[in-house]
Length: 211
Image (cartoon, rainbow, N blue to C red):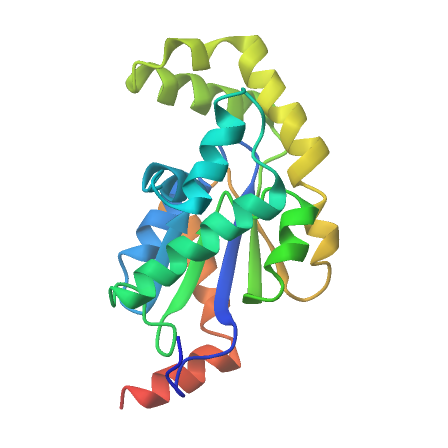
């Protein structure tokens, strides 16, 4: 992280949307394109080393069935990003970071301000909760997570999103927020995201470096 070419903040695209809107799908596809590095919140916890001090903090809360505090979550996320930089998986001097599932609320967004420069927030909008619920049930059954197909579980996830995550849109309000119709096909959603990225000065500058 001490390289002079490494930006002080990671140039970042956020993907935000209600459960079932396809943010994970779009994040993975973007991450497969050169110069985009995708990191989902789930990846952070799945790769957690519980032998470290931070890992022990996580175990301390999770073993009691408590939510991990926002500041600890962001510390875990940042440690994971640094590992990726050290392993040359993520090269912040030439790569854009794509995040989904984090920040999960406004407090996390505030903690992350020192680490990321949010270029765009892509809001995958789908007011039709019936369609989103259908997608969630289909995915749950496909993955044999039958509990996740329960209607009360799905509605609880929607309520949590509305109360905790959606206010992030107001936090980043302005030109950085791009509403995209998530009811479209995944290919069309990706097309809209890429089209918006390519209008950015940061992207055009990056393109010049490849010539």
